[in-house]
Length: 385
Length: 140
Ligand SMILES: [Zn+2]
Image 1 (cartoon, each protein chain N blue to C red):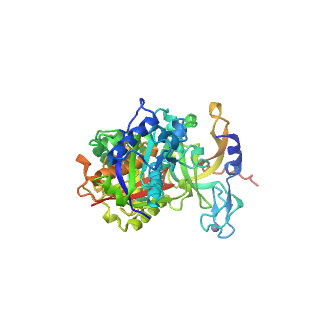
Image 2: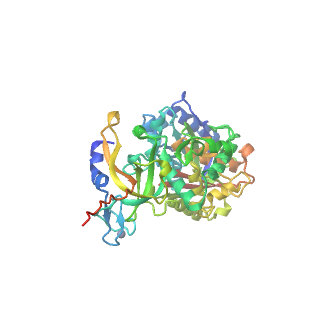
Image 3: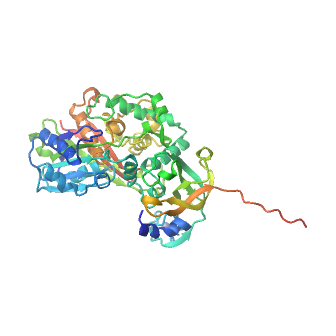
């Protein structure tokens, strides 16, 4: 297998883009990434997307986006793994370059959610749960995560307000991210006063549905320097899976998919959690942030929330998370989110994160979850010295 | 949800029919045909008792399309007395009176539908265990 490097990135602002179509969002991110990499043509395009068929009335995104982005004729496929779709598209692009099947690949994650009505969006996101046994009985994605959260509170003795530091940290970091959806800080008091969505998950504990697109350009590692002054090597790329339904898992509070993906990634890279300088995790709800920290080996079971309460997730903490706002405040455009996470880690490793720069960031990790953890996809990225 | 899909699930919906693994004895719900404990084929039907206790619960204030008429409703994970967890709505109870560990039993209720959303779907919900009515024995 060949080394694979990221030689360019692009992203649109995350938000409610009523005036911009899905194809225009994808185009903007791809053009920015190609310009950053200094390339005009690619061998393949992989599109990560979760909900275009349900919410944007469009399938067949590979050819659509390739044609619209001026790449007509190239190999182009859409990759789907619920809200880990963006990370899944990167995984496919990585395999193509690592395996020598393509040299220059562009990966774009794109999602257009906010045209739809609120109930349609809740229904669309619920398609990531088990359709016969969770969503069929009224289980929204938020509801099944709320079931995890209440059980976690019961087993480990936490209160709902103890989850506030995840949202407070995310909002604090989004203030300095020009691409973020919610660029304002929140207080623990404001968190506690937010209305319930599916209690104990309230509005400020939930990542917002959004529109957006993010893209990266991949190249073989040995050629990366001809394109980019500061390329970033993909040291690990790994996928783990588990039952879609929470009720089908042996231990609902242990995210097996995330533990498997993280373990495989650490083995590929030959590193341990102690070597990771920042971790862009899938904090669509505080409970998933906590369970991800635990599954990836940064905290013991039941200690993920304690880490956040102890201030260890901030930019200068033991393991910074949501450094550009995370899913909660940058926004969560479902199938685009996995690529945003990677773009943000690349910014950190290149020293381009501005006010949010993690000091001496050399090794960064991303972890994207589909649904409540049926899929987990982990990438470890390293600044090439 | 369309009619054939609901029809295929009727044994699970109306009778809590799952499976038992002939090799290791695991009792499996929902049916999945391969034992999650030992990975042997498991296709022997087993009807569950419908008794269990609340493992976790939430009140859904923002429902998916198709469930608006029920909101707010209580969704729960129930640990069945045979072992497996099941996701289901609670009925005949206020959220204020639900606790983890509360004994519950299965009942059949309307789960979805009517009107523009498609056919009415009946299936399992769970309610607090009612104390059995004791009929006074006739005095001799
Ligand atoms: Zn078995």
